[in-house]
Length: 154
Image 1 (cartoon, rainbow, N blue to C red):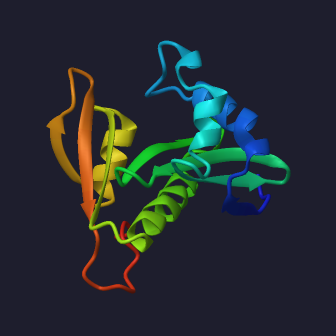
Image 2: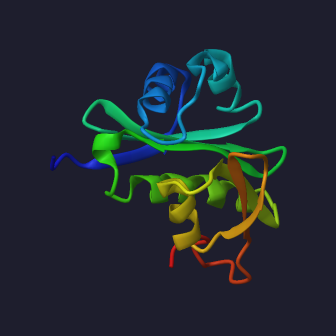
């Protein structure tokens, strides 16, 4: 596909696509897709954080969410057929940059251990920490000392 990728802040009208993408992934799947509710997705657009989407044409193909209260990445997901194009990295950059812009000294997230996502965050320079539970591993990223640096591009 040669359509141009467009990144922008997510709005409520994107929530159905966001939920569709979340449930389409092959790793880090939810045992109960209704666990991430429509209202949770809406709340993370502004009240609890901020969200971004990537679209090509008129189709949303990826999204990210950041939580302002605990300086964490709530979600980064891309449709499987659009993986490997830098979309996840760019969506993550948007979320991390926003959190650092709010003044947070570090950003955290967790993901299923021993998955592509686990390797993705390690490859981007995130610090792999302890296991959160039997399934998820924690990661952190410190704000770079150079204010002009892009935090997670190496």
